[in-house]
Amino acid sequence: FIGATMYTLLACADLYGEKINLEVTFPAMPTIGELQRKIVEVFGAEAAACRPQGYPAIDFQIARLQIYDDVLLKWADLVTGTQLHEYDQLYVFQPQSPWHIDVQKDLPPPRPPRAAAARAPPAAPHTPAVYDTPPPGSRGGADRHDHSAYSQQQHHQSHHHGASPATPHGVSHINATPSAGGGGGGGQ
Image (cartoon, rainbow, N blue to C red; front, side, top):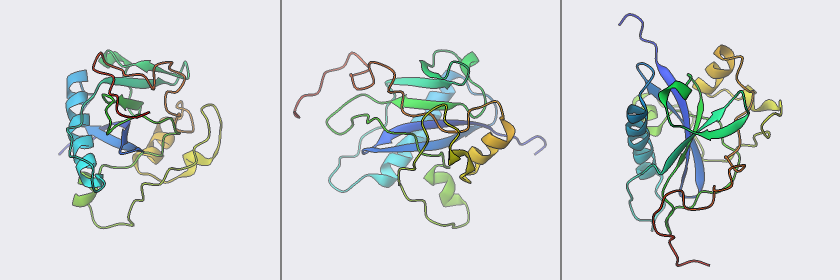
């Protein structure tokens, strides 16, 4: 059990209209394939745990991954493992469907996945509330929230920005279907 450090990344996705920002941990820096498998596993369990009544059970899928570039202060497609640094913020786009549409909101502070919380001693329940997060570049109080790895990120990664970035709304295709799949229909 020597050197039991974990490599943590922050991944946010929309689940049933709410942004969920989770701490995803690995024994070492993951490959893109390992990262994708773990995100599908963690968010699949999260989706099953928070599925509203009347919604179908669906398999969590990744259409595209983006990473927040702390140097350029913008979102970029994640294409290689060399882009990853511990505690980087990722955004997971899913295929658009009548049951899933990405919404533009600020990202909430990250938290551990429910599956990890179930193994831990009981604590105050997490509410799926949307936190007020200052816009990127602002030095608001978002970094003062005590959210496990989020607090560690602020303490250990002083070169990172002080607030969670907003949804990659600067990307022109955020509300467009990210993959070549069908456009959906049945709405407005």
